[in-house]
Length: 486
Image 1: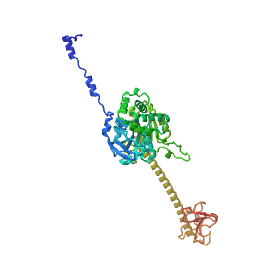
Image 2: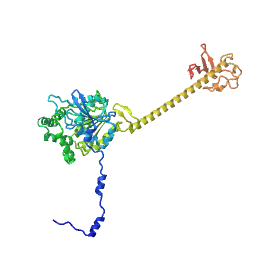
Image 3: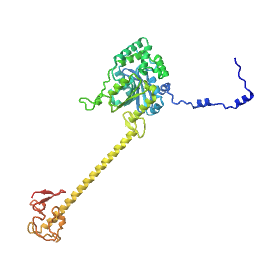
Image 4: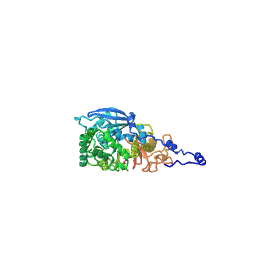
């Protein structure tokens, strides 16, 4: 064994004067973990409830202030609210978003952590029955409307509920949603899985199929630790018999009967055949359900729905939580939620806030309304000017008729006589010059009437006429005189 090296006094002195590198301490002090995506924290933060329904009790976990707008979640096959949504809702972006919402995590019957085996005679609810159970949840908590957030089988359940009760769903965020009935391959695989789960428990074949259902192919190459965690959950945290009942209900689902009907199609309405509320349809590029989401997107109204494929992932909530959280936040903000910019307004889904776009369009509409009112006031002022002008013309003619009538009383014969008024003043010819440039008397104050002179005469009924013998105008109370034939 070699002996330890010896140092001279000079070398020892030099080594003692060298500074000690404190890099390890600096690195340890600088490392600080904030908002860890811990799954256990959601269990501590949620209030656990059992909601009675017509098909048995449903487990609901409440996260947040119940006075805030409601988000209702539904999980996928083999998972529950904790394993499906705990990591995502503990993501930093989602933690900030949850300050404005209350989340109600709904778990299918018998799928919660440590659930006892359901009785043999228990008839598991169908997919339509699972959707109908949400009515009991909303009634139990006094919710008028909710925002749906579902994954896989849970997305199918929320879509059924939204289609049957469109007034109770304000918006939908659906991940890997399947809108059609199961095909032969899916039905065959899942039938074997359900049989094995009842007879042999959680076998390796069932685990492999569940891993493919959630992660697609070759998930170990992307995130080995995440895959091992989910495998461990399937082996130890799932009741096989209860899961077999849920799988059996899922493979016997019927079609959602959604259709995108073009506007103007005879005998059909778009609102009656597809979802009315805004929908964001999300999938992962490596997910085995990409084609199903494309089919589902083709059945939605393009004016209130959008399809998003997130790259490099299959289980979007776990592999790309940042992108999903940002998409969900912008989706809610586009619908008027999540960002309090002004005084809250009433909403069927709770407190709804004005976004920048809504404020802009509100101001634009107000400006347009003010411009229209200003144009209407200008037109009204123009009509008033026309009426005033008509009244002035009418009054001028009446004054002329009265003056000419006073003058004509002193004439000895029709069409002849003095052109002076009773008081000796001559009639101003300009006041009587309407069309022909002639008055009832000449400018010199004397003259005789003829066919070119304009006079005011009366008939037996007392009606006044003004003009020449060939062109007379009846003087009435209307603003404008009425022409009459000679």
